[in-house]
Length: 437
Image (cartoon, rainbow, N blue to C red; front, side):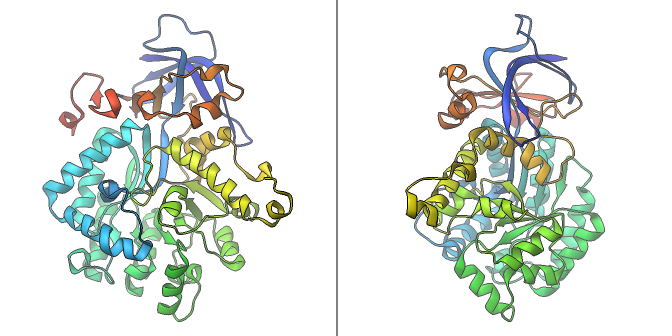
């Protein structure tokens, strides 16, 4: 058993967060007790200034793109061709892929990410290796082979029949019931033939697997998709193929008409909002408030490497900034020069989103909360600012956030100590993280 004392992030029914002083006790892979009490000197870690949060959940990221952060000045489709496809070709070399996967795991742990919904490349071997390595460390989530049987370099294109066989094999090896599972992951409508899209939907249905893909990220992308599929709206293309379901997580969802939004709501699909990626590529700004008003289920993702922030705390802050930017474009702001803050998420709401909110969006029945019986996925943070004295402590934490404050990340009960500047992640036994892979 291990005990951690500090200010505990608590979740409220109104999808907001607060802090309460207390002690968390974990045993094996579970939280066994949460006591809201003064912290004694007998805890294993922490003190009254320590912040204890559930592990952060990132619902949209690309593992092979971590080394491509910062390739600035290109729109989406050009960026894919000139930067991302060459980077993903490197994963055809399995020594390179293993080395990079290990570095990505280190980076996730160093910023407190314990849960992911991630894309690998079109390489089956690299995808299985990523699933295995993430599982060995104890991280939670899904990883999918990026399905591409057309409109990509030959080195990344997999023949349709072989592609479907590989995805099915991955689903059998890492089924949806596991802590680390396979997601059915057609990259986007342009990368797959109709046969591949239909087969992807069939696999997801048979295995009850998560579907993840991209949707309406840029106007140009929407135009090209519509032209390729006889003028159909983007959502209708996926719907025709059987991919619009309650298990579907669509990255971006910026350019959607009312009928498309209504179909997503009807199906119970999720849009993964990726504010840093959208600003970096100049794609646009998703109208979060409008989507919520229509009943769309939303999650939040870093979208590394178009997204330039690995930390979900910083992505949460970007979500707030994107909502403010959308206000600047409103008729009400033009008339009054005033922002309607009721339409802008608060920092306590952002903390909820990157923990319990994202867990709920991807239908993890447990996770994202510090409660008895929950998985022991926790982040122990030691801020160096007087945050507890602030008017809104959670806002001060979010806006002054420093990744170096993350001192320990616990995944499935396994304790990793974060070294200086986020480097040198080590296990509770003091061994380097590479030694446990």
